[in-house]
Length: 497
Image (cartoon, rainbow, N blue to C red):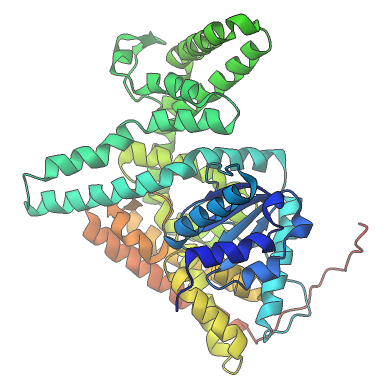
């Protein structure tokens, strides 16, 4: 019998330290994200053992409970209701999850038995916690906040992307011609105004007034900017796209903060928003839009050139290094790049390559499953986590299997590299594969696939990449993994160092 969202939320609340220990609640596509005041009060292993929980990721003062698509929305609502009942206050913040989730690093140091799945899970959580402390740098914090701006937009990107793909199929087939204009309007409306949403979220995340950020970002898409000349060239509506909106809203936050400390309280409500919109707006028109337009064009040109000239190599590098990139927190810089490509070209050619990392992870997990034939515990863990992994939710396999075992993580990267090289090879032949939205990967990405030669060929190439990633990840793991964990060659450090 499936556990109800209420039962899951009720079980989780005391295990995370109770209502007094929860500072914020949010969710994304797959994870319940809880801000906690004291990490020591969280029983991570007990949380992981709650039925319906696929995994746990501890990142600083944030606890990410992997529940899965769909179910996480209901569990979050029940959790917030419990908190509201207990404290009388709402705990809501913007979702802050990155597509693909946090990823692991290198091999785990020694001594774990492969047969002990509980020990593997604990080791994975320990490694992640250590890595999170080491990676809490200003750069990664800034990248994480940039991700906070774009991640809440992912549901709309997915919905509009699926509708755009479906509408394209209808147009190509000549079916339902009376419906296709309406579908085109529905699918395109959000993308036409995405800059406004980016500006609103930017101000919200960076401590400004959200509507002022949206107001300044709206300048980017306003048709009247065509009458404005900057650097001797007339501006175009949408020039600079989401990057221009992001820069405009960041400037608006800075101007607003400057005003708040200098404008008398009696005039604050009048002068602060006026000065904020005026200064940031003029800077946007006479500098930021032009500069962001140059950068956006360069990103699109560079992505196309990279795949057209070095496709297999680019795919191998991107597919093989994506998990380590996420481990370092650098993957968050890709989110605005993906969004820029989608806004500029209609799809991002980078996401299908990066999604191959998940295929390598699935192949590696299957190899561990085959190797440990008599280990009921770890095989049960893999069986329960594999469906989510096939749909692009890799955390349960990563933190429950490959990360603690060490070597399977490296062979998973090899599988991702092989899958990426496969997709990149077709790019050299002129067959670009892209995704109309960011967020899903694995099999869940198929409805969002398109390319310069149509969604059919794009889906076929992507499927070939997945199969390649599965196969290479499986073979590399099966041939190199002996059922144990290699000893850490580096000397142990004391806890005081």
